[in-house]
Amino acid sequence: MFLDTLQQFCLRQSNKIAIEFVDEHFARAKRVRYGELEQIVLRTMAMLRVRGVGPGDRVAIQLPKCLPFVYLHLAVMRLGAISLPLNTGYPARELAYFLGDAGARLYFGDAAAQDAVSPALAGLPALTEAIFLDCTSNADFDKLVDPLLPEDAAGIRTPADPDATCLMIYTSGTTGQPKGAELTHGNLTANLASLHEAWGWQNDDVLLHVLPIFHVHGLVVALHGALNAGATTVMHRRFDPAQALATLVQRPCSVFMGVPTIHRRLVDAAAANPVSLRHLRLITSGSDRLPDDLFAAFEATFGYRLLERYGMSETSMLISNPLHGERRVGAVGLPLPGVEVRIVDPETGALLPADTVGEVQVRGANVFKGYWRQPEKSAAAFTADGWFRTGDLGMCAPDGYYTLKGRSKDLIISGGFNVYPPEVELVLADHPAVAASAVIGCPDAEWGERIVAVVVAAPGMTVSEQEIIDYCRAHLVHYKAPRTVVFVADLPRNAMGKVQKAELRQQFCA
Ligand code: MCA
Image (cartoon, rainbow, N blue to C red):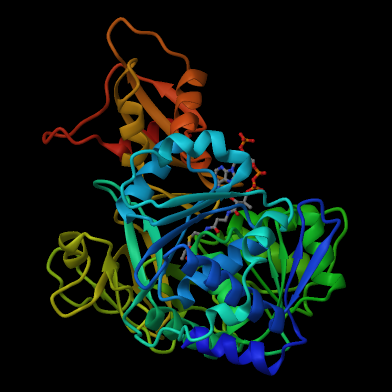
């Protein structure tokens, strides 16, 4: 399994750099060799065990991108416990929900955010300790693990049960609260094997990593992918297009992964100083549909044809354009090795012929176990014969290439982050001056989609656009807050009372 493979690399190539972490000023880099990684992870496991963390316990990690995040995540999984990475942008309201729902035993948070998040940590019966770390350096973390020795973790066996959950990622939906998708050791291992084969990961690869590490894309596809190959990851704490381009060229790097917003910014940054990225072995795009014009602009600017792929938190990667062979504009490519994909009529479940749009359903060892403590929602997510309903619409060409044709769940994607309108509408409903609201995504050149809230003010109340935006920002992670608010007298509804979002998009997305 993945953790065994990583451990083997730590033993066999102890001197090789596993991660080179570059700070937010691009001034300092800290290099961690594979051998050191093993020692630090063992000490971190010992530190967690002293705190009573054992198999199945949930450990929440809400830290900025930093090395301790990586150590904690790997150590938690190796203890047989469940890593729960969380976006640092979650305000107290959202954080309290995640920690409560997951029943997190331990919470690691950013010292700079201690005052802001503390209200969320009160009244959580399962939470035994909250530890705040200053992540501008590793000093706080070192203090935590320094008293322990790698030998203190001796005797802890790498988890052997492929069906044990090791990672939980919260995803939202059209109804109800976000759900924790449970990924198992077997799921991660299967997907890494597929990607290793399809993308030809090599031991001498150098990955430039600029993505957040609290999502499947940055954590599993990118970071785990490199560690699973014993490759080197150059990790930028934040994405800066000029710094990224300089590193890609000068280091030089062989692998890079981004979302369309990131690729767009690279293209813009290179307008003044063109560079070639032809030396890279693999540059992927995912988390959102890659616009055709960006695909073309990237190739024209860098001489590299982006490889678009498709996945979800629940499944990791599913479909990818080929490393060798046609990278087709507008298509997400062919099913990855070990992943079965079919297109069915979402109403009847009947299999659909080529070139016909239907729901994308998938099956394979990569597909998650279910939603944490949500047996009904977990059951509803699968068909009777075990296929996962992605909720995405797509079609398959006669030659096997898949194309996505929209989301059946009203999902908005902004800069590669998923936003479900009901989450925003629920917050708006709590505002005293809002009688009703509908949240839509409008096309946006930079972000893919921009969030627009259409609001009916409560009788006799006045409220400004900025007040609504500020209110949402206080109660939601930044990327879910609307960028525009429009006020209307009434929302268009059908005979069943359902808001007609298509009509709103037509009216307000111009
Ligand atoms: C930042 N802002 C955003 C977003 N990101 N607003 C909307 N959508 C966003 N995605 C806000 C900031 O709060 C700020 O607001 C303003 O935009 C400008 O911030 P800036 O510094 O330019 O942004 P950034 O920090 O550079 O971030 C842009 C980014 C980032 C690098 C594109 O959004 C990003 O890392 N996206 C990747 C998402 C990702 O990894 N998704 C994977 C999940 P203000 O100035 O007003 O405060 S999907 C997944 O895992 C599945 C499995 C898959 O298939 O990959």
